[in-house]
Length: 173
Image 1 (tube, rainbow, N blue to C red):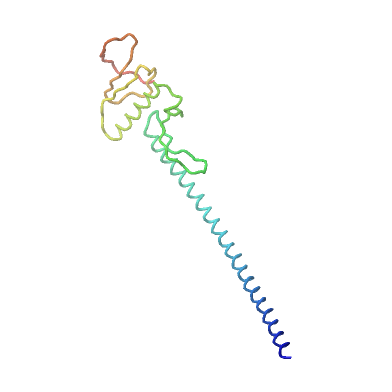
Image 2: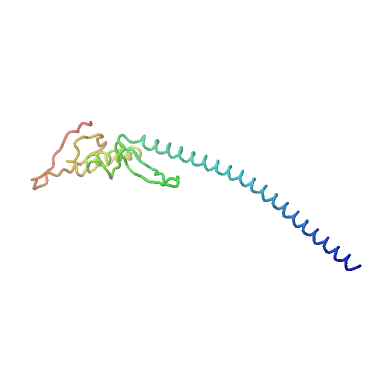
């Protein structure tokens, strides 16, 4: 009968639609798998580029730090600090024998570092200015001498009035 034939045709069309949907889903699955492969390859390439960029940055930072530190006699600088995420934070911390200026060095060593910085900037800028060295009494060893006129301010117990003296050059240790 006609109804049976139409029902059969509808069943075949329904099955055909299922196969077409399955075929489309299979093709889409293959397309997504291919996209995932391409993205995995691209992610690897990007990871490699990030590694190379990080190496470049670290090398550049090292060269920059070495170049700046080579200008000073006794002072060095920590210019970058590594962060937990692996990136670098810009800092400018003076060091004396590897110790931070604000940390475990003595007042006398701080004075020496200050004189070294002033001498270096003066030399690089081609200028000479008088230096006022406060707390000069704390310097037991001069690691570097001022390269210009120096006025040393020295506190002495029992000294009631201002006393001005002229010293000959101090020897460097």
